[in-house]
Image (tube, rainbow, N blue to C red):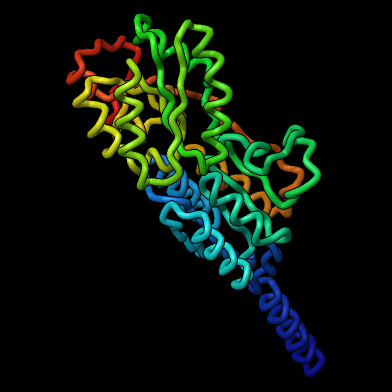
Length: 326
């Protein structure tokens, strides 16, 4: 009897130990347990950049939840301020920096060659860093990749010609401090000239010069074209206050700018662009992807949009396949 009791006690202990072992949770994978700090440096507030940042934050939060802390800082349109923000992110030891707009990217890349950097709303990466070779063959800035907001400039030129075939003089208004804008001006000018227009570029160095330069451009041209330019976008109301009373229409490089002063645009979805950038960030943070090996991502879709109020004021008819900007 004693032997039977001893055996039963031993079995009970074994079962108890097995039960305890089976109830213990499996250790979480190291990657799943990690938390991440991400810094966002946005050049300036305007609808396009705001949408890209929001798409980035929403998507990264959706994928990582409480495991990611995202700090968003705004440079108020000033590249030196972006440099200060970037240097602070470096001092804080963030795991990744997202730079929204070309001047923000340039400032951030100058601050660190170690922390992965993703750009968004960048028109041309090679032009941003004054590289003569293709970005894919770059030998510097190996910690940089991201997404581009480059629109099909030839199609935007064709859009201008569709709406204003009888125009003679086209003015291009842009900020000379933005490498992205210079790139677009250089590339769209020959296409516009091929349509028979006389094309003149008008540059301003900062927001303080926008109104006066716009006034000159409006006085000398039948129609204006404004590329995806951050300074112009942040001053769209000032530009509209000059162009609309003079009856000079504007074809804009993106939807946010068009909403402020344009007639029509062929624009990308900046929120979706930010989402794509967040997907790249996830691959870097969680899966250990090498930012230097990641290809620049481009928007596959472009939408024809128009500003209903300005079109009505200028008595411009818009085809049915154009969508009104909400």
